[in-house]
Length: 119
Image 1 (cartoon, rainbow, N blue to C red):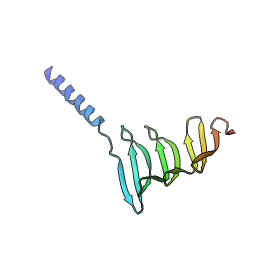
Image 2: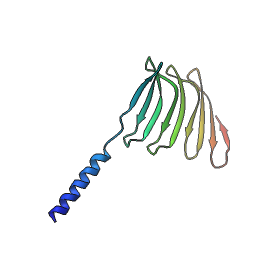
Image 3: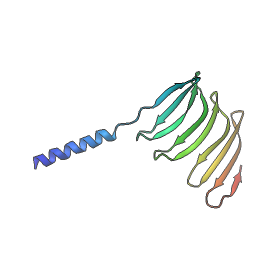
Image 4: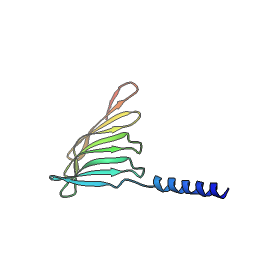
């Protein structure tokens, strides 16, 4: 009986310790930018994107939920929000356009009947 309890305790402790391992965020210099991969606690990728040499967000950034589903695609230029961002939900897609780092237009695409709602 003691052997069974000891084995169960070892299995439990091993599973707890391996379940707590998480991926380290990575930052790789690629020419004039730093390519970043940021992870959730569960080891899934949370975000990918780039920093310029001044440590400001630049280029495309993609965000994911803890299950690996894409939740957003964004664009930055020297730390400022630019272009059209896309937010993905179960209900549909929201497009948010930026001009001068401010929201200039919002369009919502609903997945149930592909209606366009513009704000």
